[in-house]
Image 1: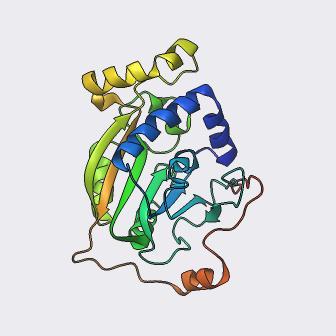
Image 2: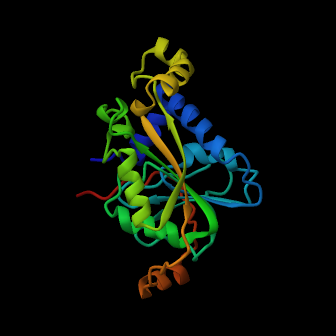
Length: 250
């Protein structure tokens, strides 16, 4: 079962989680070096990677799926996170310039519907980055990390999922070559592992990072339902959150 929001928060508070955030964040920043004036959405549990866009992007928000739960973010000031149904994002059509999906796709209960919602809210010319566990990597086999939860992907599988949802993969990155263990010598040498791994065994990275563009030709957006319209009229895109909201019990 995928980790809930408290487990995810705790992971990123550990040395291994801080290393993962640093290495993956470096790859994300290389793909999006400048977000000035843009609207950036984080979907799933993307808040560890959204901080780099604060003060630069015009708008930064984080939406977390109901089955995972939600935490207030950032810790100071107005909360920029909200709880959402991954199949019905409470955002206007073509309202976001960038969408970052982390700990979202592999844990989704409706992956295709979620990707179609991302397509709907993404502006023409917008871009999405998706970070998923690599099926061949060691991190996907370690259930003590969030990358060992849910469904891992191969490059061909994520390509197929994107194309079926009217996205075109544009750029690929890999990260997390360091073994997923909280061992201090490994943590200190994580960047060396990253450099060597990307050269010698790129297929065995811990995660796959893909940037994709929105296809707008010959495409028909998902028809808006009355329920989505009702949500938009009743709630704001971001609802302040003061504490963790646990996932739904099965």
